[in-house]
Length: 170
Image (cartoon, rainbow, N blue to C red):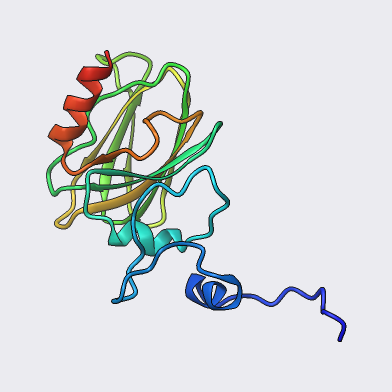
């Protein structure tokens, strides 16, 4: 019997898992186990994983040159003004709305834009930035860092946990 080389699309990652073995751990209610799967090959419905996440930050995949984290920003809260000197960052909002502020120094965040579902934000290394949740529900986003910004396996349940972890690294 000859195998077809034709690509057969998957309706979702669960169908992929049934055909080839689960690409990620799924619990009994069908939810994705949110943990760091790096640096192994990994396939995930990033939209579902992002919306499922309720922690301030959870590393989903950490490799040598890239990292994916999931974030949930509470109503009225923000990620905290920050700058990554050697890390480019991509953030995609999957759910919610916010205000992004970016600038060359922390006193002059002269670029501002409103962001909503499906908006992407590109932040160059060495740029100060903050995202404020201006909506009425948690802002759900995922972030791609190149190179990785956080230790493999990072989980910060709250913003306070994230701030404490950052303090201990400096």
